[in-house]
Image: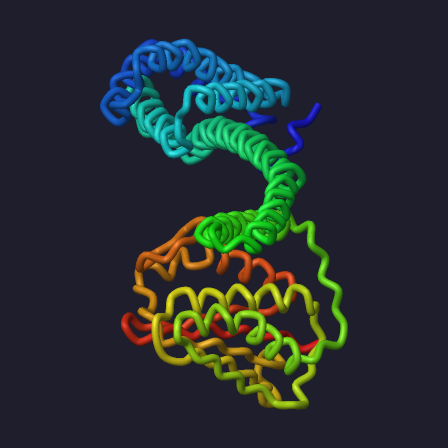
Length: 385
């Protein structure tokens, strides 16, 4: 039998009887000192947790003693397995991984002190390496299991979220679409009677609110699809000039309602190879964001080809004259559901996250340059094919 870890050869195939004897003699003292140290370093640990510490530590110490007494792989494997159980227990006790590591750091120091004191001499290099190797093996196994349990928890939460989003996609969204259709029909009937003019306007207002909700749901679904990597890019020739001007055309009414000017500067011959759908999605989110956070001035949409030798083929820039982005918000600018200063604008914080995920799928880069009170510029660097 093997531990399947060649780095543990010293620990697995060599006995250290003096270390085993010293550790067995000092086990009770080590447990008491470890409990005191844990109380001091982890004050949030409750009595139940401390009791479970007392229950698990003797097992770990005994497994280390067995390893030192033996020159066979089995004992090392039992130490690894026992430490895995310890890591899993700590996870279910709502420990953090930092607290788990602190436990083993305290254990290392106390064991070193007690064994040196028992032997009444400093440990030789070989014994020191073996002792550290035993504690490291226990620590690594515990941390690995703790991390695996955490990943399972995250995976389960993600699956629940996916089912919920599927429900939004297939049920709630369809019901809302039917509701908007009925509202449109009702508004058309009432519009024939002048005395219902106010009611017609109220219906239009409700209809706009529902459409806004559907738009928000679409963003959430897009973000989830991109996050899961379930979108495959289809690379083909794209008329960049048409795509940029079409995006500006679609969002022009929104810009006009705020008194904003859209200025598109794209060479007539601008052609690239990309996924037109993903490219349109990126541009819509960047341009929509620029319009949302601007209250005056001009929004510029510029495309320029890169000189020979520079990274990327085309660079598309979208610049606004909005309030800008504070430096402390840059670190989570492209995170989902994270928003910095919103300046009273509604939203859930998905636009830039969607743009970032889609850009990665295209193999491009998304850059930002901004200064508070002086606007922002987002640059989409499209890769060479």
